[in-house]
Image (cartoon, rainbow, N blue to C red; front, side, top):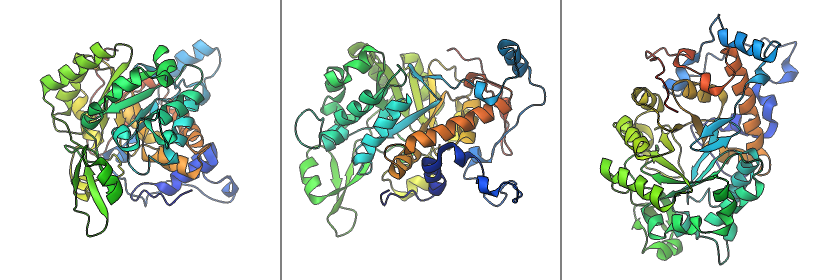
Length: 423
């Protein structure tokens, strides 16, 4: 375990899950028989989604259907968690969110997460600016921390045809022709030939809506990248500089044309689009789906980051609950992926019930791999899978697609009825 920390995030509970897996879903078994357990009323909800409650009905006709189908009483183990995520088949309604060129993701953690995600059959997104900062990886030292290193680690561990790798491209990545490099690279051939490669157009991110990616560089690194990124000496008198990527320029027509470009130039990959939680999130998602995107990722303002101005973390962008509310009337022509403070089952089930197809693990995946590089993410995911099965079966349902807004009660909002999905 390194010195990695995540202030404001339930780090200790995530590390427990990375160490103890499914056992951490319950109170410590040593307390059984001499402790009286109850709800923790002292912990305030972190946001609107955390304040919601899952509300099982009394009458459960889908449980009766499952009983007839199985010819026995159904149990939580009968819940099917396999899910289509942006053209991939996944073992869970969960994917690994984008880690780009930040210092945290550029260490061995990026490789540890890649290897475990491949083994688990979870889709994984590789974030922007990895090539300009760490190199592509065909030649030279540091290959394992490059973009190809992460793709190779995932592909070598992947079995059974589940999951897939998604490669983001920013403005600076486009200058380096990242998608062209990956599309023709032998390392990605197996993924491409099995339909498990996607490219993601990054329009924005939850932690700093309207801005591009930011990292902190040393003087020597800044000298190496000065021709590719904007650099700003605003971090005091030390030898650290702020590196800023371009946020890109988007209008409705530019977004349509970008997706058509991806469809035409890379016809064998799935097309994903990542949006920041803007006030026009519903219009943007509708444009992306109608232009042919297989998945639209909505990164709520609760999303984590390696580096961002503190004003943005606390005051900029719509919360995930409001994004999902605004997206309710929009016909889903592809997957709706959500991220922001995801690490345990209740938040994932609430997001699914409110219209999401899957949820992304960001900080939780890094903390789990930091706790145990070989098995931390695996144990965290096993705990999450058990929790999902317990929760979904308690609602009288046995597939993630059966979840509905009626499964959620909110003390602050009226939950609308689910629209008919077009996929």
